[in-house]
Image 1 (cartoon, rainbow, N blue to C red):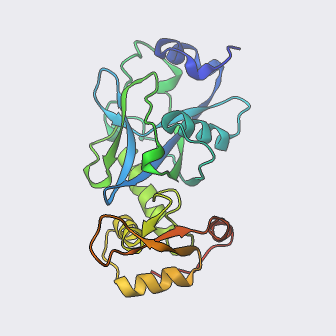
Image 2: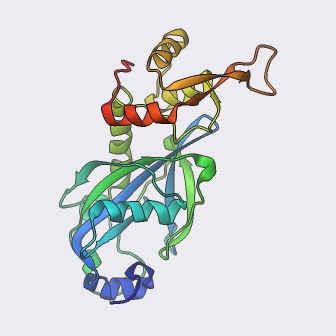
Image 3: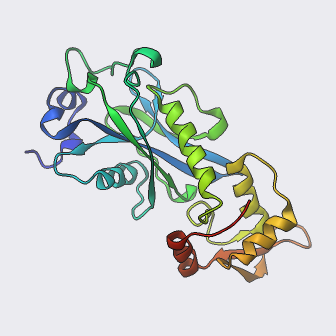
Length: 256
């Protein structure tokens, strides 16, 4: 077996990939970032076709599925130890073709294992935008951030996967904290509220949001204000990492 089957050229991958990867199972990752008060998603542009897709991959024989997802995120972002949430399995028998159009990869010139039916496992992750190094794979011409409301028509059922991931993220807001991997180390309360409003797609009451967030006891107000703002610039906050991690394990009751 070669050292790293994921380094196969496109031609070798489509011809010999079935020797190394589990058939019929794939992974797709919805990687969310937050920048300029916009929720963004990392996408890949296929070579030659100029069509866009989610970062994804396949599971090596003998490899744990979660490890395969971690590997996909690391290779596309350069980040490690980021929490991935497995949110849905997509098994529509027509997801590879038919109702979603013809999606033959440009390098497939004949019969290939890759054209069989695949069931994909969806994961989403929250990452700090400034720390990501978008890196395309051997099948892609580029890897770029797209604003969540401006995503183009993607290959296969990837638009459906993004929609389902956003629904899953919104449901999590009431039960688990969000922000540690999306905001800079120091942030203002308006910036934190803007993050929640952007994810939810709705406006929240300022006083009520601040009261509830402080009551969670996962952020600490610093004795400094945001620089370069108005005379009464807002105070800066930071997450208490230990309490935040504990809230991720035990859950919270935010009640948005």
